[in-house]
View (spheres, rainbow, N blue to C red):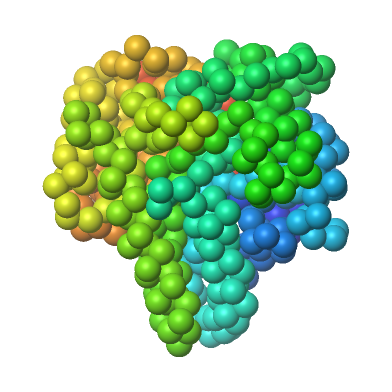
Length: 421
Ligand code: 9WN
């Protein structure tokens, strides 16, 4: 399946709906690819890093030559951005920084294989270190806010239409209705995708960014969408920890020190967002200066980071409990994007309820990493069961396990590969 989605230098996120390379998809996919071929995994990460903007940002899409996706390179208009490197065709926003985590796991696999794989991987790691440090630095400076990370579009979170962002999107002023064709609806049922109203706001934000040539400073003055993303910040903590270990192995003590400090600072920032009533982490609407308490998978940022603090334990119990994975109506005891008991639940609609295999993998991996082997095993077994019909859906209906969104989605296959090897 991954071979079918492979364009040589990049794996399409999905065969028809997503014919390009997405940033966090590629990082996840590289983890699975490493089990099949270490050099191919490295090639995937190399393509991601080659798209790095002059500012340090890793863009969320690197476009292939395939048609059929909206918005494409021309629709984005990033050619006007001084920070876009020559020859790169990319979008103008980012996605969660899974890349250093991927590099660490690729290196681990290369060590198991030894020989040429190890040599190639170590050479690549030495090269990648500087770019990954710049990427993390950009997230903590250009996008640093209250020791977590600020985002400028729901697409940056990777959880595009999660109810987490509803209040923020309500403040996005669509001053003139934009004309465009929703190519995604050629490949997936409208009931499983964001609405037209949501797309008007998505594209309005791109117009706002374009008006200031995607400049990191000026964009903050014109954007209707500025919000911190605790889930992304928790991923940055994990990634900075991975980069610390990689740097130590390569004898780069200064990088290790910087990344360790980043992880500590960001970890404290994420823990500081916890709502004392619900126990979940909260995002903060920067323009409106208010906390967003909407309950969603994003609230489990502390579980993701791991740690022994009481808050993390409390979140773990909530996630495993009857409102979430342990809900009696769940087809499998896996983390849904929204609780089945939530008034916001829309069980077939994208990030508003479905279960996402790649998120199952992420939670299982972090559980293993933080010593909760029993949680990791339970999620792995249920996650594999969910994928048993080999459709490798992008997401699944939480009660019926109906396959939704794009079939043959690359990162869903990655989860199976990693769990089986
Ligand atoms: C917009 C590729 C991407 C994922 C995101 C997922 C979806 C894109 C879309 O697909 O977003 O970036 O067109 O809906 O929400 O997490 O990276 O798989």
